[in-house]
Length: 429
Image (cartoon, rainbow, N blue to C red; front, side, top):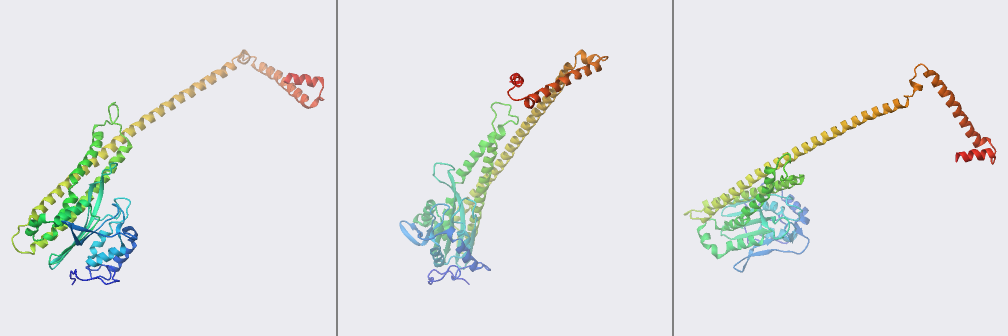
């Protein structure tokens, strides 16, 4: 059976997790965990440099509590792989924390390597607890989207003697300050009344991670209301001058908003899962210790649970609203497109009909012209028509042949320079 020990020292050459006496779930392949950590090393860790920060309590450094931060939100952790393995080995961190580690590192968007994790293990009078919690915070950039998605990885180990150690990944300054406040003297009365007092800093983390939900939800609601106004106030046929001009880009924007709301719902679901695991762990630790149940943490848990449920319901309603608005906008644009298509088709048919009428009139005009050309008495006199036709060709054909003969004769038959050739050439000029 595994025993929690802090006074053990790792030997030089010990490699986490294959050579370290740490807890791993039954059946887990430690060599696979080791290989995955090496394969993801370039994404997760710096090649050189970096290090860890430590928590402070009233200006005093708490050496057993470490913070590993990235350079910026979606960059590598500011620590080398070797240093990080050494840190985990010295704390004998259980392997369920490794999936939390793999959610960090270099990313190009919020959808890469996303996992909302929470796991705890209780043994005798000690426990280990880890989770990954995502949350929204104002980025203060002054341009673009004012909100950014953040995440923090948390690991805690507590022994029977209440000696506790913490490891935080990408802890924001605000969360770090709240944890330091949890360790401070201002909360000693709470610690004294709570049977599971070593878990209290997690409440500060959850409170900090969930503090912006009302403001963030309202921001999403205001963005949604712009499209709601367009969708529910627009006329299908666009016959009113004050009607909204709907564009395909409007549908694209609200679909993007739908994806943002879906992401927010997923983040909220992850927070609720981590909080549920925390509540379960707190209940287990609190029940094992006899005495009066005068723990203020219970009421705080109930309040946070109610708030998370409220945020969940608000986000669900918002998701349904934007989904209906998206469908309505798409239907209006589709109807208008169909109307435009029918109008265009009718115009084309009208043009084709006019062209057909013009062609018919052209045929009539051509027939009339031909009738005018052959309307002389020479062709209309039925009694003498054969005679006149023969006479016509009898005169015109000889003249045509004579003309051709003279032209050929001029070209080749007469000597050059003769008076006749010069005469005809003058006529032809």
